Length: 352
Image 1 (tube, rainbow, N blue to C red):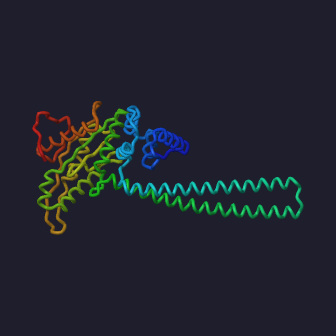
Image 2 (image 1 turned 90 degrees about the horizontal axis):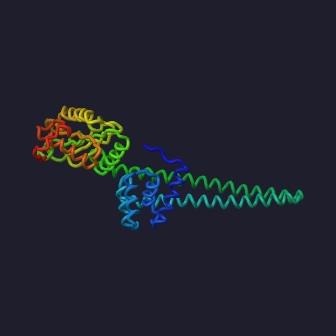
């Protein structure tokens, strides 16, 4: 995970993003601010390209345009109602902090004025009685200032705790929005986002990028025979195997239904085929049993296709070639791995 921006960098980005939002009449809501901060900070090349295109076209940043940008480029889309509620609570907490600081600044200014007045009176050579009164007044003001600081410290601590709770809640929302509920793998939305970034990174660094597309053989037949609950167990079994085998740099995802995918950065095609074979073998060696009845249900097999990013590829074409290789594995008898190097363009298509 990237380390947070330094205070100087964050302050610069904050000022620049707010200035650009004001220039283009974009309301400074939390969602809009997140997008424009990321734009100024150069966090997302696709976001940068999208906003640059809007600026070049002269289009206005209407509410719909702003909403579309957030839905497309927020790191992970969250449930909008709950997100807005949390955003409002963050705004309120930050507002209270600013109010506390403003009050503290006013108290400090008052205390400074009292000290300046005290200094002036000392210069006039006060009598002993007057000096006693002046010292007493200073002690009173110091006590007030001390109490104000204690209140400020307590309020800041409370607000900090509240903001930390809200941040954790947002992290939970982000995790839920990017995770497939059944398998706990990355969902399709996160897969698309991760693959787009992986393609950009691979082209920028001239490093290989491979993709595996994985399909459970005869899954519909299994579901129809044994029911969806046992079908879900099969999906979880495959997901666990992917999680165990994928490295930290890789992204394992549930692509949809009984299809899975694994993004393999810095991995040449030959190595990706080896990884696919490990996955296929690990799943196929397991025997499924109905725990309630003890009935042996057989084995789960996978058809896997592997493809390597080339210079002219985008994410879609890479997925397409890996998909074609996966269908070739099915045509050749299932329970096997094929790469794009094995593709026979003239082979007839096969439905699952």
